[in-house]
Amino acid sequence: MSLSRPLEKGIFYPLALLLTAITFIIIIQPGISAFRILTNNAVEIMLGMLGFGLLLLLVKWHRLMFISFACCGLLCLFLKRSTNTSLTYAQPKQTEIISVSHVNISNHDGDYKELADILRTLDSDLISIQEVTPDWDAVLKQELRDSFPYRETVASIGFNGMAVFSKIPIENVEVFYYKDIPNISGFVRPGSGEPVQFITTYTNPVFDTEGFYQELREHFTTIINKVGKYKTSSKIAIGTYNTVAWSSEMKYFTSMLNLQNSRRPNNPFAESAYEHIFHSSDLECTDLHQLNSPEGKKLGISGTFQFSGRVIEENDKG
Image 1 (tube, rainbow, N blue to C red):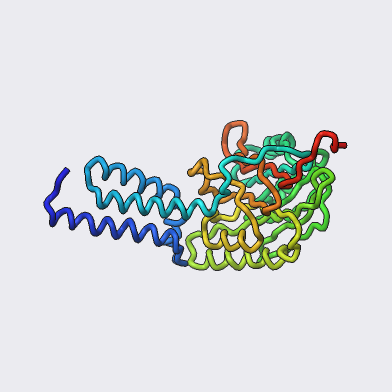
Image 2: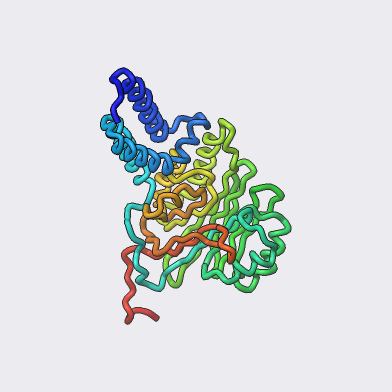
């Protein structure tokens, strides 16, 4: 396709400026919430730029094609930094493994007993449950008392109720608050291994306010100040953070606590989830998958972790 030179310039410069501006807004992440919509949808925008570049290749608009591909490449590098760089999950190689599930009750459409039955059958050592109301609190304590005898719950009539249920003893459990939002922290020992500190968090999903990202950073600072004092402990951070893994606030949180993303970069659309499990560098993720109801609807996520570099030989077991 050929256009007159003035018309080509009239199309080239606005589109080139638009592509470049969108790319740098996503990377720089200004505090204006309207711009953050672009950051939250960075994966879809990156793939859109790739498709747009291929379309430009077909119509032989080569200069604009190079700009589209360049912007796509920059976004790809930017997103890559927020995922675990290993292409595959670690191979399970020891007995000291801990499995963790995270469930948000708002994802469940059925009745109390149906969800309780699902949770009871989970092959998890520790379950983090969020948006726990007083009614749900009573049901979960009753239904899970045998399968998960160790627990800490903070019920709320709003969004902020949460609970932790565990098959193994919880040590030094603590509930601490950012404003009126609870966070639960404690330690568990998988097998005969070292203690692993868990932190479960829920952040208010107030996306349309300019103060959301500032409050999110303040919330993360509260967690960092509280649990960061355990500098030598292994950590697993679980939660509905209501932000993407590549947001500046999330990267601040993970860098200050030396946490890695459990997700691998092999499913780009899954990366935009607001529910996350992060782990410290002395742990390896052997599996991470979406947790679904029998009807196939997403309930949360589930992952399995082991201590890195600590192979237990067969003759050492038992």
